Length: 333
Length: 284
Image (cartoon, rainbow over all chains, first blue to last red; front, side, top):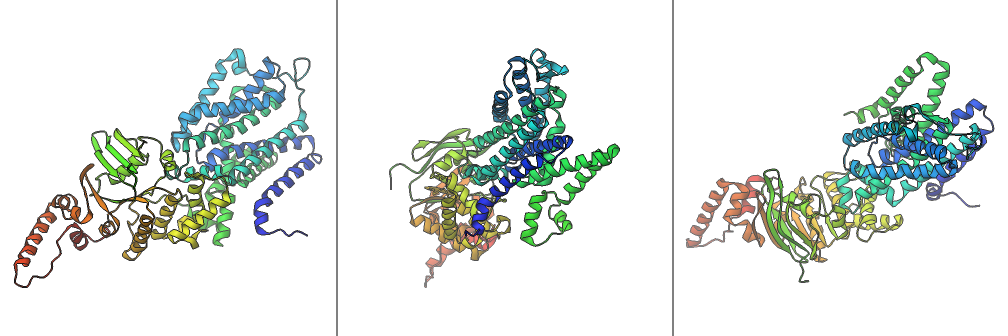
């Protein structure tokens, strides 16, 4: 019988775990009530979103505070082409992702020259501006009144997927995001992303084309976010600019990644699952004050684990010191 | 020695507003030469390195590497042309191990490989060369000042450079820690690498340089053999101020007087090095 060596485990273990997780998610679907299917599908949606933000914000260190622009753009691309051109969702979906990626390249080339807070603010501005453009192109997008994707009858090229259908699509997108993150984190390209995060000048000095790396990462991140947005638009049927370009979606992505551990594979998944699960549980049990409680919990988590859960555990294991107070002290400014 | 210099600058300069940080520096560095660059603080030494390696865009002049015009290109283009540098303030990639820090350079350097195992193996060889092989698994934050400088060295060597620019790799080191760095530079020299050493540690400059360039207020003040340059009154004045220059002149006279005495004792010619070490200390 073959033995599992540590090296073998390091190489293949995470993939095996991912596969088991995906299969478990498929099995889970058969055990859930209708309402629960929706909730878990939303968790998958946020897992995919958090993982895609993590590529540019976590690994590469460029905190995109306008990430929702790719979500909205992907969503509107799908809704507009499905409504006006009667495209099938399965055609609109990949092209919506590519459209978002192309937009990431176009805005990334100028914006990725900015660092730190300047980049964050500029992306936020672009997202807000893009929403205004979508509102004003009302012939195409329905403006502030929204646009409704045909889901029944002759006008619908793709029948509405239903709760189970969207569960599977979101699961597939989460798996795709995980796969890309897993591949990138171990590849040469991943090294370049991390090097840029830690010191851009030093990265350039050892031969890394920092501009190309940043733009490609932003495009990849935009692609994944756009795919999720397109799915969300179809799931919602009627979409409005205010919802599809909602800053709150960006904030959720950031918070999930930060709480879970940015620049790691597992962190965004843990953050997304924990936050969505917690939010849902609080909503059901403390309806009136659930956002308040959620906010307090997030604040406490960020104070105690400023580097995120996964990074904290990694460091604690190396130092043999699991004290949260020591952790706070280590990261105190 | 090939006829084309490894590095040539023609009228190289940059101005920040009204300040000419580097002003009209022309220079030719033939293959295999080790050039020491000295000058007072703010003379433009690091700026000169930044201009050559693409971290700053010159406002005038040209940079030729192996005869190729690489003026104002991006740093990664320079790196691929086998010009490597270290940073005065060490810039390790903190989230990676020491070994991975060096592996990045192997992956993205001129001989860029896509194979992680190859890169890590080569990184180990380079770490062994600079003497920190046993620290390969550590995060760079745990390294001592001397070891962090060695890592900076290793990251540059990962590019298998033809021209290596060292920006104060010995700053902050204790005298005992300087010797291994000097030995490393001598080894690289023996292999035919062309090296530019920016350094305040005069002993180091003297020990390894074939020629010394003195920068002052962004301009090329002097270029020549180390002993000659360092005993030049103009250099002493620029480097150590007017007071020392006067004192050096007096010492020089005293030495001449000693020569005239009946039993002449061999007195070394005073120069900037002796004065610097005596008055300022090696780390100043």
